[in-house]
Amino acid sequence: MNRTFHQPPYVGKRPAYKAEAPPIRKESSQRYIIFSVPLPFLVLISLIRVGQAQAEIIPVLSVEPNSPQIFRGETVTLTCRISGGNGLYYWYKDGVNVHRSAENYYIIKVDQSHKYRCYGSVDGWSTTWSNEMILSVIERPKAVLTLQPDGPIFSGQEVTFTCEIRGHADTEWMYNWNKDGVQIFSSVENSKYSFTPVESLSSKYTCSGRRRNDSQTSETSNTVTLTVSEKPKPTVRLSPQSSVYNGDRVTLNCNLLSNGWTFLWYKDRVQVAEDPDTLHDTVSNAGETVYQCKARRGNYDSELSDTVTVTVRVLPKPVVSINPDEQVYRGETVTLRCDIQDEEDSDWIYGWNKDGSGVSNEQEYRISSAETSHAGKYTCRGRERRGSHSSHTSDAVTLTVSGFTYNTVIVFVAVGLSLAFLNIILLLIVRWWHKSNKDDDAGPSDVIYTELEFKPQKKAQKDQVKASVESETVYSQLKQNT
Image (cartoon, rainbow, N blue to C red; front, side, top):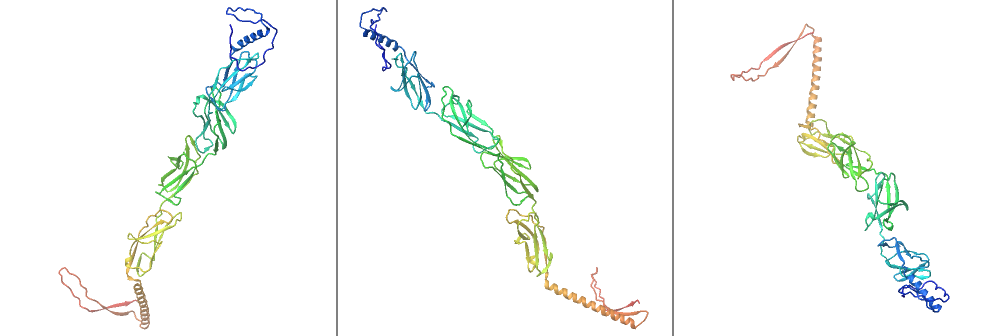
């Protein structure tokens, strides 16, 4: 029984003709009948039988990595396995011969999907075609590297890198980590890499993935630069920065040049608030109050800020002085002065009130010619020129203005002084005269008479009877002792 076989393009050498031999024909009873035939026909029969045996060997084509999808740019190995193969191997892509070699493997870098087949030879005779292998090529995924927390990183703060192969489950991959181009971890299962830098640094990190089932790799991720700075220290700004008095409301700002922080406030070393970056506080006690703040993000705390000391003072009370006196006469010049004893020597604007109405904005209130209309109660008060504070109100000073003019009073005083001087002169003359008479008239005693004039006085009597006393002269004896 004759058998036919499919034979790929001829490869190898034809065997040399041998001496004539009888041809062999295979019967259905498996018995062979020997005919006397020429030698060339015998050789042809031998070749046919060899081809039949060769056609029964089917190559097996396999690929490594064996995956239904191959990443573009991935290197794969095609292997053509032929039992007893000892000749060249031929590789076809989409029906076109692309390679031949003595090795039964073919290494390629795939760029797109193709169909591959192979065949080989045994003892110089070609095999049949192998099975068809379709390589399905997809884009190679790229790893994406992210860093948390976002923003500036400080020493002592934990950081976490995350390597993500988007479009693929995390469980498909093993991960490789690189720092400044040097691999620091290889084929780790965790897609996150966390650590706590203890000093300032700047390094570049990348990652990539290797698929568990076929060892295909992703593209290397983007580069993330980790810059670690020294532990931050916030600063406190105080408003107002001028004088602070009892009862004032102060505003403090805790400043740190990054976002995402919560701020803790301390007053005299005791935490008083956990707020945004601003603290409003009303000071109630005179003396020094110390404020500090620090920033917190997650479980990380910054350094404490430097202290800010607020000196709280009691509002001053002005003192009023008046010159020449609180009691003056019409026409006199009067000066009232308002003095504020302030520790900070602030610049004050003064205000005067008379009986509740404003009369002046100067520190000294001068009345050049006093009138009775100037009489009243005067008070003063100060207001900071570059601030918002006002002092207490001074105690009231009462100014009294007499109805006489100052010149009249001067005249009265001058007349009074003149009369007093004349009286003194008269007394001296009388004394001199008296002494002269004493020297002339010696005697046990001298009698001096003087005339006293009595004027009648009215006195209300119960019986409404008026008594009149007539004018008369009474003499009295004055005795002068020697």
